[in-house]
Image (cartoon, rainbow, N blue to C red; front, side):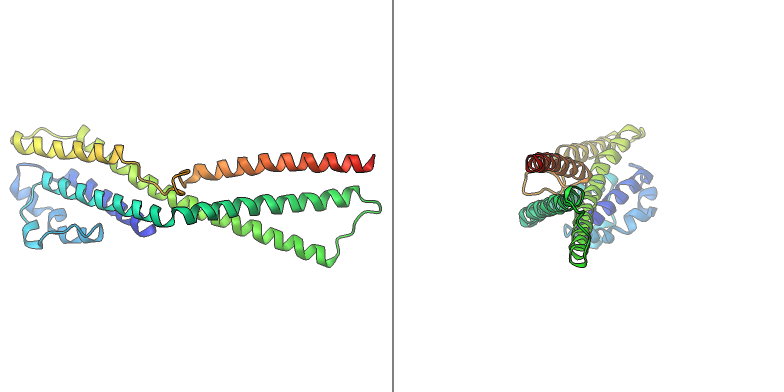
Length: 242
C-alpha cells in the first residue's frame, strides 16, 4: 500500500506542475520540463504510450493521461482491498481482543491485591505475566497505529487530487485559443469529478475504513466493554464479601 500511496503522490506532483503549462503557446509547452519527462510517468502506472508520441502534447492531453493513471491506481486499491480486506478485519479484531483481554487481566490482578487479606504479594511468576501483558498491549497498539497511518496517508493523497484539480479550475487563465482551453477545462472537470466521486481508501472487508478515525472507535469500544466487565467483577466481588 505504501507503493500505491507514493504513486498517488507522484500523480499529484505532476498535476501541480500543470499549473506552469499554458495552452496555445507551443514554445512554452515544449520547453517545460514536465513535457520532456513524460516517460517518468511510468512510475505512476503502466498506462504508457510510445515516448516519441509524448513530445507533442498539449496540457489537455496531459490531464487525460493523468485521468487514466488515476483509474489505474484506483483499480490497484480495489485489488488490495479484495485481497487483504478480510485479513485486515481479522487482524483488527485480534488487536481489539488483545487490548480488552490484557486490560481485564490487569484489572483482575489489581482487584485481587486490594481485596485479598492478607494482601496478595507480587511474586516472580505474576510479574512475568504482567510484563507479557504489557508487551502484548504495546505490540497491538503499534500494529493498530501502523495500519491506521497507512490508510490515512492514502486518504490524504487521494483527496489531494480533487483539491488540486479544483484549484486549477479556479485559477484557469483566459486563453486566445478557446478550443484548446475548453478541452483543458473539460479534462480538469472530469478529473475533479472522477477523484471526488470515487472513494479511495483502505477497507476492512467493507465493514469500515482503515484510518485514524478507526483508532478512536476501537478505543471507545474497548473502554465500553472494559467498563461493563469491571462493573461485573466489582459486583461479583461485593457479593463474595457479603
